[in-house]
Length: 274
Ligand code: KIV
Image (cartoon, rainbow, N blue to C red; front, side, top):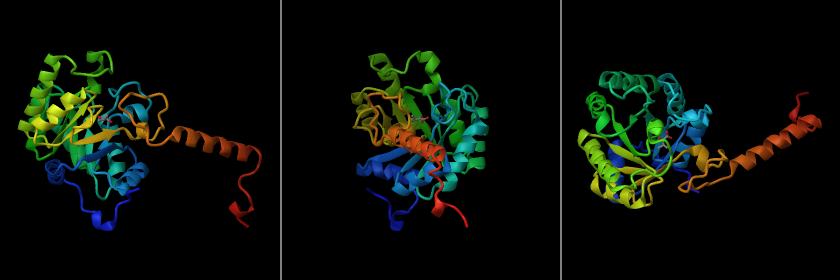
């Protein structure tokens, strides 16, 4: 187990992430949406925390990420920022706050940075969001790209299956990745693409490429925290490694609590005041 020492508390920056790529040191990234979870993750020594719009699924119970609002993202991001001492915190720009309108993109990104204290934003897409990416970057806000399976476009794809298996889509992904790097993005997430394509993207770019379902050859990995802890029980894609079975552990704890309350086994004398 690697709980970080106070000597390792030097904050992660975009510069340090770039150095890690060039040293060949893999970058570990996880999502978080609240203070308590973010505190545990940061204390364990994670490099990057993503306040993902996957909050829409795992926190709010929506089927897709599309309903997430800017205010909700700022709420989650503020809670995470209050907990974090070391990690670099990236916040997803929610659906409808940056596509097709670069002025709206800048206004949305500024609100996220000002109101939550986040360190960077993430946007899904390539050439089609170039103007928005450039305008946000022009304000000095670090931007992370996201290509491959981009969940905000789920109704265009029609399925959550692996992207860019065909040559034409793979070629477009490589071109978009290069474009985002040329624009000035500090990093890129690639989701659910063949491992060989993940390797190609990571080799092609100088900026760190973080994969989720993109194989082992990228510069780092990201998972949704509820999935890797086994809190979500039904979601079991091939790329997901479950590091705990909290669904079972939590269900057991809740059942024992209910039983104790019903049987007046809780609280006992030591748990009561005189
Ligand atoms: O919203 C999210 O959690 C994400 C990750 C899956 C990369 O974008």
